[in-house]
Length: 130
Image (cartoon, rainbow, N blue to C red; front, side, top):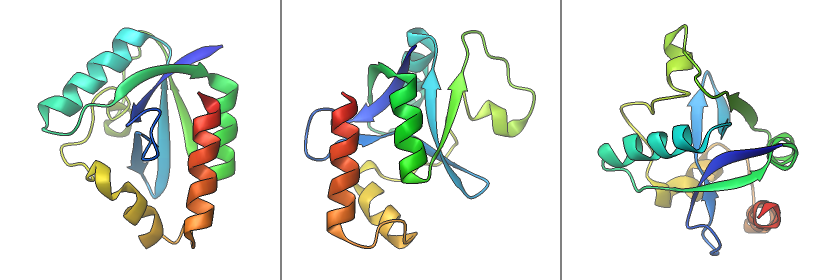
């Protein structure tokens, strides 16, 4: 099954995937519907956040990437209606965001990656998903 994810600087050395921090976990959103993913991008842009591109990738590949990176994958079905504030973040971004350029530094601050080699490995695995 193919899903839609949000990528920054797709196809470049600085490629990154959009994520949320929910209850101490890094969450990657996988949208079933391209229109929902594009709407989410528009909401990010409305908050003066750089607009990611919507890329169609294999759900299995994204889930495998998330497992390896210690992230949580969340599938957002077409027509999803949230039932609480946390679920609302799956269809509408939070009011504040981390800077896109700081995603590498944020990972290092969280001690998720202790060296540039490990970070490069993660970026290469993400590139291979494309």
